[in-house]
Image (cartoon, rainbow, N blue to C red; front, side, top):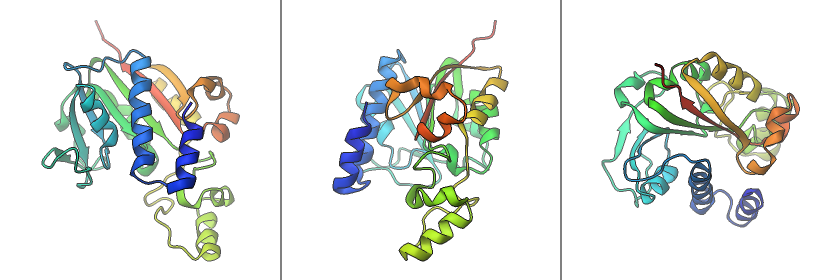
Length: 236
């Protein structure tokens, strides 16, 4: 469980580089515990990578990592020239190739048509390749991101009230760069994709409490950040 460590780090230094590095290290350890191969033969796509911290940790594990996002934000440790520039919503993802593991971390809630991605995610995977999908579901306490808790007043009313009361400009604007997503709907969409097999569904920061994700409605509020590990089915 990493939740208490993240809270301590956030209270001390907010969401600085160390905060996200803590998440990245925990992500790689979780993948390893769930027997996802992470070695010199493993090809990885860190899609929507941002600063690339998860991909960086996977590189340190020996994996061959491709970083992809729509703009250059990679941390200096990764080095320059390693980013493939791509717009996830507009460009043809198949041009990225196929990988043993695709990491799609905290991106789903920031694209306008998550269903479209979930319907075609397998094009990025080799046969029996893994998809690591995590996102902040809308009804969790952090669903509104920087205006968290205000989002319970509604996606439009909440952020406006936050801005008025706090006097702070918002980074995330509902239906522009932050879209309400729900665990139940995401799982239904994944089940429709016959090319993917869902292996694990857990709360990202306290995976020991995986049973929460099996309780409809309640999971939407208590999961905080949901992780789905899926694998591409090897068709005969």
